Length: 177
Image 1 (cartoon, rainbow, N blue to C red):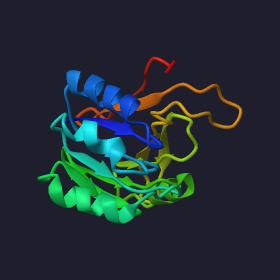
Image 2: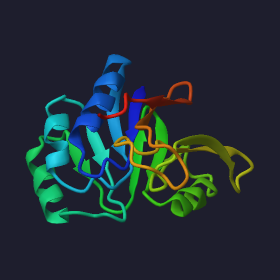
Image 3: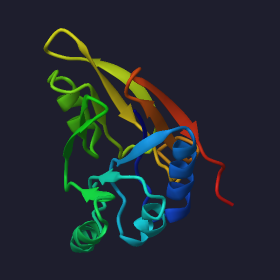
Image 4: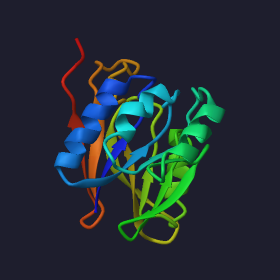
């Protein structure tokens, strides 16, 4: 199963839609949003793409009540998990959070195959050793909106993941004008 992993869209719908469309064309069957989605307007166009979206909030929470109302009306296409999510997709256990230190801590438990986080606006794909003498994938898709990370040029990024091979590829979008 292929998935689209995004984060830090910060109320910017167009790059979120562009990443999801690219991921769908590569065979993605679900979207994980690692927080700082902010508002329901960010999701309206994405929900029309007919792909399940799982989201957590970040430190820029936005209107939580509106997100829950949208979820209730989305016919299963949008699940808003609150602060953290535990998912099973493609036979893999996945933990989703916004904060990097939470992500690293949960990757160390050995309870998950994949931990996704956001917040830093800098994309990375790494393996984290865990307490059960193995490794967990720890990924951050950066900012799909292309918002600057401290000391880093703004480039809109997202991750295409393949859960059957556990391959995670950082992808970029054309920069907004």
